Structures are given as C-alpha cells and as structure tokens.
Image (cartoon, rainbow, N blue to C red; front, side, top):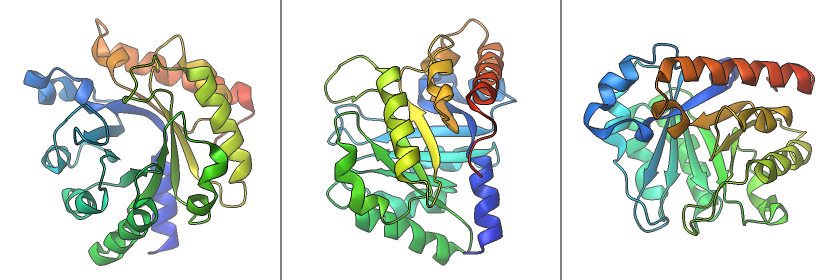
Length: 241
C-alpha cells in the first residue's frame, strides 16, 4: 500500500474518538449529526463471547461512511471472521485483541484486505489491562499501525484505571520506538481523567459515555479536545507522525 496514503491515514487517527455505541440507541444518527466536530468514530463490535456484552456489527460501520475516520475495535473471539466485512463496510482502522488466539493472523488479514480493496486500512492491536506487555513481543514484531490500551476489562466488571493504562501506554511508546505506532487509550475517559491519559502522549483518546451523557455532547467533545491539546503540549509537543 502506498506509503504516503498510509501516512496520511495515520495522521487522521488522532484526537478524540467518539464511542458511537454510547449514543442513545433509538436516536444514534441524530446524536451523531449534532457532533459535527467529531472526526474519529469508534465502534466497539462485541460478540457476547469474547466479552459478555453484545453490540451491532459491520452494517453500523457502513451506515457511518462519509462521517469521518471509522475506527473499528473488534472485541470478538474470532476476529478473522469479521475483518473482511468491516473492511468492506469502510473501516479505516481495524483493531484486534492481543488476547484472541488468532491475533497474528488477523493483523495479516487486515493488511491483505487493504491490498485487495486498494486503499489503506490501518492494522491495530488492542490490549486488555491484565495482559503483560512482555507477552506482546511476537505481535509487536508485526509492527501494528495502532496500539489501543484499554483502561478496563469488560469481562471482569472492574472500574477503569486510567492512570495504570496511561503508564502502560508510556511503556509501549518506549518498546515501539523503532516503528512509532499511533497510541490510543480507551475506557473511563472523562473531562476529569483525559489529561492524565494525554500527559503520557496518547495520540487517540476514546470517549463515549462522557460525551453522550453530557447535557451538551458537542460542548463536551470540544472540552475534551481542548484538554487533550493542552496536555499534549505540556507533555512535550505533537504526537508521533
């Protein structure tokens, strides 16, 4: 895939990712329409097996084509079975879990789908809080475009621990310095916690409930974006390119 177009897509995988499925289910389209500033839409596709929750599939991704950068997070036991449909739906980024038994094959499949469709699709690796970073060496050797650090594990019901996730993100930045992936964080991100996430250099921060449960979701999105920019400047400048 053309290096210039992939670099341009990586540059768009930044800022605040809006957790789409936190929007009111009966008025999802209208809720997104009111978020005109949203540039990254984040879809947690859950199968009720890998995690106990169940959400919608690739058709919802396809319905949002043209709204911005489409970030698909596959929280499923068999990501290989979902990747082609997500790619066809228009996903710009597909992240698979390190804990899935076929994670390495799934990363390769994302890249093969990108080549088949003739457009860049970023390959992402998502990591649960309890997974030791030392266990990721084989997957990191595949040089994923994006690494998504979760601040909570939906399987155990424990609350989000943003400081711990931010610390893991900082360690991953050092571990991956030779290929500089986009680093993302998801889970428990609010106006009160986002600064800590960004001070360690998170390029992409995902927030859903904090946005859609706010009295004014658009104002909350703007507030989160402003805090993120201030934190990144305090942390030492622009994120990785």
